[in-house]
Image (cartoon, rainbow, N blue to C red; front, side, top):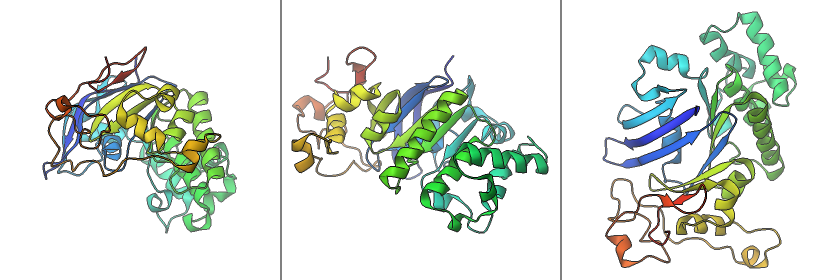
Length: 315
């Protein structure tokens, strides 16, 4: 049984912006799914929708099954019980996600106490264990966020996400603004925790190289839709959708003089979610677009073993 099943998920804001459009994704226990795309493609909206953390103006349709139970139809009490304990989120930007006037130990202990999983004394012990688990001394529980480095704060966010032993972790750009050495440490830590605890991971990033190195499967998102999905390394090295190829080509590769000296990218930006172009939403920026692309949107279709892509040139 899949741990997470997202079926035909749509998210529309009160302004008419269609931020997520018909997304279907699954994650099994112990597996890691990456979601890639530029800023504005709907990645963070997707992450927040999984636990109904979006503003009241957002309208959600479809289903988000967590261990077979639909998050979108849960009553408020049940939803509060699922947050942190069933699924948790490592939010983007650790410094802005931590409360500057509370010690980190108190912040990690808060969900444990709210869910009634331990007494205050036992929660304090659990905080020390969690900090040790993510590579920080338990004594750092008395520190304030400003007393920690960026990498240490990110580890605190991971410890907080693990506090109630959830089955699923959603990591939204968990290595943003970290230097490459700390980024590598955080990614290895996440991989280790997923393997040891048999939890599912949904990891969001604009960096295909990071996702290819960390995740089992990779989904490429553009204008609120999944336009390609498959084994992470295969999608990164040989994307079938033009957008996936453009994302991959935007990063220089070690040993490849052509990409190192002249990394390629795409002109323009993703479309405004409230004014999407007709047909395939990528066609105005696509270097290989055909006349048919402007007239009809493309559904995901088979693009090789275990792979799919939403492009008229795939078939």
